[in-house]
Length: 361
Image 1 (cartoon, rainbow, N blue to C red):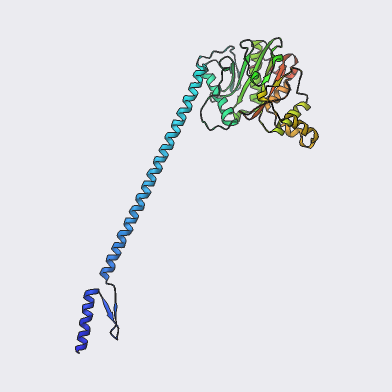
Image 2 (image 1 turned 180 degrees about the vertical axis):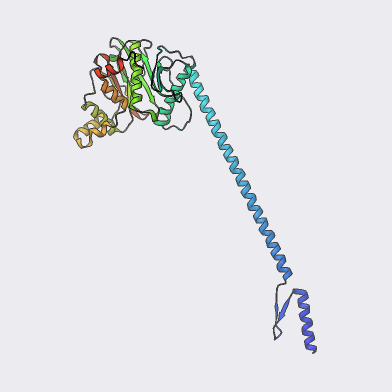
């Protein structure tokens, strides 16, 4: 009995000191964690979990705040970049006196929902310069700038044909006209030696910087350009048209194939001594032409014909001649052919369609 009481007393002491306990039949004691401690540990674990969750939540909030800050920074940088582009364009407009522009020749012709006219105001000229920027700099040169103008020193002394879509009031086509009646400086002389062309008798008109908005590049718009050109020639009593006609390639073999094609169809005339200046000469042209002659399987007329731009093809159909070999323009990733049209040798069909237009609407 005494032993039993002593055993129970020991068990009670163990329970009081270290929690609930159980004893085996042989007296071994197994300690069991008290419920009170388990609850405390759970509360502690719950507190730790809440703390971790709060920390994670705070990090998420800080990340989101940083993301919003980054978005604002990016937005502000974009706004700053646009402001710099606008400022740069404004400097160019001031430098080349675009705001002082006055046309030499004025006319306006309506055709359907389009108006073909010469730019009469600085604002109309700016619209043309912005279209040129979109075509030449963003599309051809792949520049990332979103806003700008394509302008040089000749724009102030030239006239500018524009085609306006009256449904949107947007300028969708433009062409720069530089008449010998008003100017003795021509863009083509930077790429070609053309002393004999400029010495020809009669009024001459240099065409250049033709640009058409991408979705408007159709035969109908080309016809409108011709219509405006014909009216300008009539008003300035022009006999000769000349200018650089671009083909979008700088690949040596492709340059050779296009030149070979133009030669094969009789479009090239070498009688005027026109050749590219040293800076713009295609140094690989002779080798490319020799290679094509030795490997005729490389030349497929129908394939090469598709590379000829619609505007150049229309010049040739009208009776224009390509004067010699092309010049290479690495800035715009293209080659330029100097084309010349003598109105006395113009295709009769083109004469009838574009030069006899009085009374048409």
